[in-house]
Image (cartoon, rainbow, N blue to C red; front, side, top):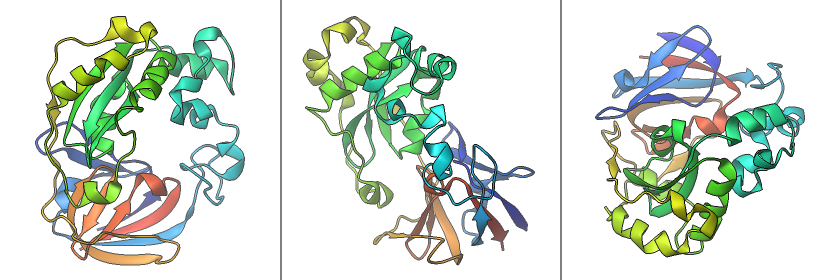
Length: 264
């Protein structure tokens, strides 16, 4: 079987294990069904996710021009504390920013390589945790806008990590933690504006990934350096494909890349 299309992050479905789908313009591939099969990934070109032109990707699936003008990659996306839509202040497109920022957001703890704090829209739970390769997660606060979530994250990351060690995550070098205990220890550090939104009673969410074999020494596939790669798919975790020879391929980091996918 052969497919061709522009890479975008895999769609996911909560199940045991997580179900993954790679979506091309005219194809919908259930990736779990490809475990233990030989895949060949070939670089065919690039296509900006915004303008649709055949332009080199700069970051996050966008060409250089669109990265600096599209609202979905404004600074407030990576730094929620910079959100200003609740004040009626525009960054790039106030209508878009209101739509995204002025909705319920979750500040959470997730454990993928270590316990970290993060922010996501409520509608993106548990998708965000799946994309990070977290095997357990729990909500801390649910606030009405992105700004409040952002200032809460800034306050809490003084006391807990806010980054994932992606290599440890992929090697499954993890330990289970009592996230409820972490949440209680962090409660006093929540900013005054967000204290009323603390979630008093909830439980951890456990996530299981479709992995038959974890890598022992992670090797990241760079299609610019290796435009044709063939390997046996052994697992999927986060947004990574894991192959038998310890090669891993980050789908999300390659958004906007046009590839040909051959399955044997």
